[in-house]
Length: 204
Image 1 (tube, rainbow, N blue to C red):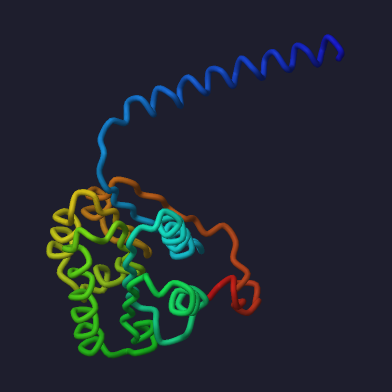
Image 2 (cartoon, rainbow, N blue to C red):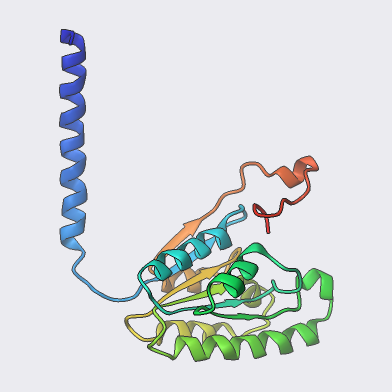
């Protein structure tokens, strides 16, 4: 090994040692044991996909999972098919009306949103659920189909060991303040804008 390579290796090792020390310090400082509230927002693709990744992760530990999908449900999706066929232990409830811009029926949408929210409240109040996913819930707040404070209270008052994941664009500052982790998915480039059709197994 050349002297130059040895120096590079030594610098790399030193940098990694510093990084490890920082990571170890953060791990040591995290001494609170409880469920977490995660908000996946932003205008980019991948929010629901990330949430369902956490569903799979929880199932790997034999945890009890509940999923409530607002907006989606009128059209079959890969995650719906997989859960229904391969994961019967997951409780799945869908609003089933499809996208609000398709229904164009505010009164009907509000009624369905309230009915669907009632199912979510059952899960949020049940300590046997380790993880609850509320997919596209933020739209219900943005369109004022659900009362914001009612939603915030239910999220805040859920069992201490229960984790919850909320997905969808926006959601408001109060929701962001309540959540423990907020990740924003940014739209840099999307195939659909280039005229490429949505792809089975990738987009739905």
